[in-house]
Image (cartoon, rainbow, N blue to C red):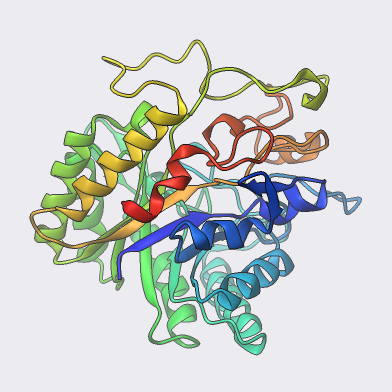
Amino acid sequence: MFLKGVDISSLKEVEDQGGSFYCNKTKKDALEILKSCGVNSVRLRLWVDPYDENGLAYGGGTCDINTVIGLSKRAKNLDMSVLLDFHYSDFWTDPSKQYRPKSWQNLNFEQLKNKIYQYTKDTLLTLKDCEIEPEFIQIGNEITCGMLWDDGKLVWNDKDITGFDNLAALLKSGVQGAKEVLKDAKIILHLERSGDNTLYRQWFDNIISRGVEFDIIGVSYYLYWHGSMDDMIRNLEDITLRYDKDVLIAETSYAYTLKDFDKSLQPQNYTKLIINKNTELKNKPYPFSQKGQAKFLKDLFYRVKNLNSGRCLGVYYWEPCWIPIKSGTWASKSAREYIKELHKGEGNEWANQALFDYDGNINYALKILNKL
């Protein structure tokens, strides 16, 4: 079955803050709407301790184990599979930041390897006790530059990359912890820059030569940052054959408008939308409109379903339910301090890339998902 997935990690927080979702002007449960539109899998990120010293939530979904349990149960009740995305951090990780959890700061490398093993294992045992068994387990999030810095950091020196020995050891510990609990779950290693075939060859050549065992190559594909769809497809076709692995679009999205949401929903120090009127796209292949968003997804689904290798398992749309809410934010001040991004403000910087409009009504792209 081709996976039509969504990352709904922020959904509970949006709902708790008053967000509502509508289909044909009727208020409904967001997951039930997604299911009716063809979604058959959810992806959920997990942070270790997304709270400050006073116990205040970091925001961005505040994706702790309880949030994961609640959303997983809702998905399983609708017969959806679950992809669990371990960040191994207290907040966002990506190629620009892979900070250790606060409670792991003083561990040496051997202790860190044991911690990632035990944490992964304990988390999955907790989920299993709740009758939740993720079908897919992602060891790290967008780990192009490594994870659990500085021990697991990759460093570029001209065209050479160093740090793979440590990174491979950490990945092996995470994989071991996962497999000891859920031996049939599929392990995903996830990078971004999905149009850069040279990078993917270099990265996976090094990881595989060091004996890291995994099942699926996960990629992020954002057209704004990762090159043309042609570049991405060429890369996927190469790496599926080179490594004899399935691939998965673990993250993607596209803006349906450049118009900002109402000022009444913006905090005083609003950070602004990431994709905005200043965003420049080469040749602008898709308009920033509901039909443009739908056409982007239509083309993406068609292209990955028709890979020469036939080995793309599916597509996960990132944060389709992250609509603007007055008290909602991608990161509180203490969270931005933790990830060293105090230069940015607060608020919802992703709302114009959801699959629901600012008022919670389903977008055209979601309406046609069943046909893709």
